[in-house]
Image (spheres, one colour):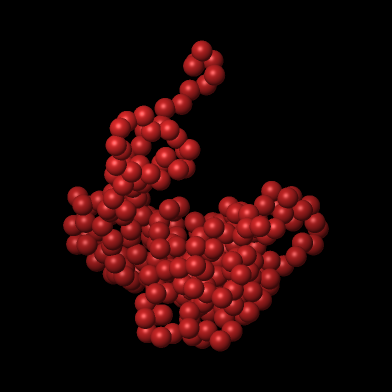
Length: 249
């Protein structure tokens, strides 16, 4: 059984989508694919259980048989955090996550592990990216989204310094059109000379991040004032105006 750990350097880099793409490719090759997300920092209630919303989505997309709350064994609620920090000898959560890994990997050819939003997450609980991957001999695929030239390079080089030989490679996501040439012709050769494989750079597509008018209406429980609205129109830019009560008065 093989496993790959997908993590990111900055939030909203596209981990869940990347996990799904990799898993779907393996499923297309008739491989039995499993998934887990060792730690959830944004609890989502599922009936009487707490779990991870991304994990629940992946379960449905991949048609997995496991209950969604079992895919993320460590769910950090406020109460859980307080209890954990208050104990002199708290539970070994790395062992718990490894036990979950062993259970979820049974009868699987490949297990996709969705890691944390940043490389610093999980240290409080001993379930950081490197500790988990080293225990299980996983390869680590790192995602980052493009900010600017120097921050992109600094983020990736520092990730390599932190992860060492456990770093399998890097994917740069959401690269603006005017930065594609820099990433392809300058950044990628530079990183690969430092033994940091770059598996790809994904151009930014504003429409992929856009909401439809209908989705906004449903989320806000809003009333539409115009006649014959097109609820499928995509909204690529949002401006939210807010002020304090005193300022509003």
